[in-house]
Image (cartoon, rainbow, N blue to C red):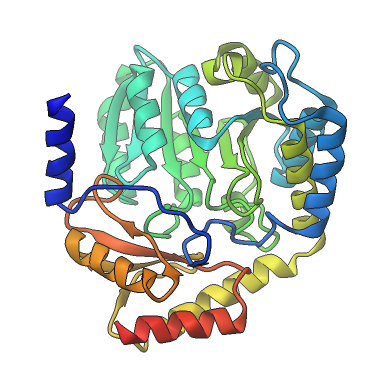
Length: 371
């Protein structure tokens, strides 16, 4: 169809065209495998053991016959790790947000969302059919003004936020958000995709980082695909809320469940995080080291003491040019452009992980220095 070709050409002209690239043969400096667990020997061994017993897929949705002891054991382990009563598994972070948020609020309800929330939260807000108000990024005075003006007009209210924002690496103020949720009788939805395994002394996430405990109005979502090094997602809350999601979250009801071998590997990864707290501490040290070295170059780097360190370029074409020049040196740092970030806010999204050797880091720094 001609219009598709025309649209693709427009994207190329605006430096917004995207295509997939193979990472083989490249040093990957934009992975979310923060704790280097995806190929940990114990994780692989446990996954292979269950793979041999159960096969590749689960065979059905969790409500048909796709719920095994490995799904249950992972949910129990996640509940323990997050210090929350109950947990429900989802196929991905996107499916978790798309299933949970519209199940919690709908027509006649109010939904307040941080303007830099992940695309999956934005889409879930639209799908919910609730009244959606967007507050300025981490501007909690603006959030309070909206709550004072609108909360009384709606039945239920949900405040939704990333804990660690995936493109900037900054952190939501969980303590303040909990206070607003209590004061205005709201549910608080925390997307901890990039906080799980990263924040807090033991990697339990935003509540631990801020010295807060779970309360019934708090819903904690997280992914298995970042620091845990697996695939899938989860939503934690009260036992009643978990039962409710099993009955109302369409992305649970109508999706095939995670493969049992994936669940087993993820559970083993969480055990390793709990056993080897040094990983969380070392990740923080690694992030600081990379930031200090980058600060000696002529780059503007955002750093909020998380492993996400965007190198700000601003111009889309320039971001692509720098990415391609790094690729020629065997370095992969992806260029992030609109609509993932606002127009004119393009960047190279560099991440810190425990995968890098000292030689890898020196190669990275020398490549960046040439730019």
